[in-house]
Length: 188
Image (cartoon, rainbow, N blue to C red; front, side, top):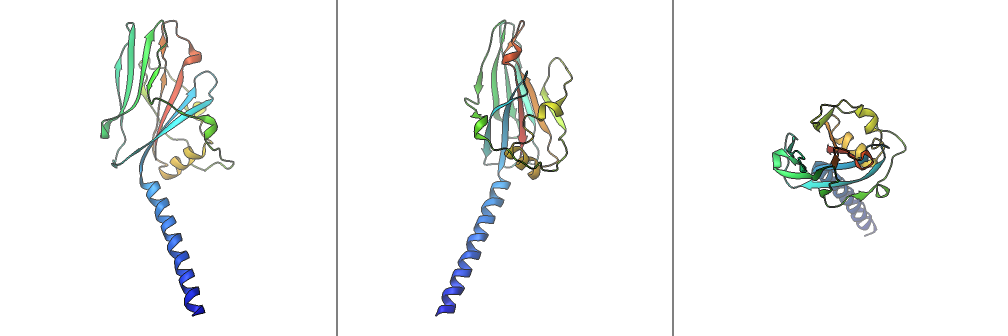
């Protein structure tokens, strides 16, 4: 009787461990997109948003829909394969627009940082909206999010993924660079 009890305990532990691993594997296999916001002037991480999609895609393309700001303009970004909006923000001439989607960002202090950097090379960067064609040092900007645990998890799960980004400028003309934000878009 004692041996049967021990056998049942051991089997239940193996079963629980197996379910835990399956759960972790399922989470890694989910189609997730991470949107992170970084201050343009200080390169300070300000917050983010994670989207989970029920459908998998073999590719990840970000397309944009741009209305230039004669007075009022707008930039929208879409996950093309799923025809799903990822970002929507006003661009105002001689004023200041706002981000309409996502409606909120999880604050930076809610994210964990790692102590040990995962040895994955910098990603290839793709600026998905750069109407002026300006060159930037993307690796330096990436430093703001490089040590976030969630970024390292995304990079470890998909090390060859392109890091998509763009500079959101809610006001142009005179514009206030202290309001500008880098938006990074990563796929797991």
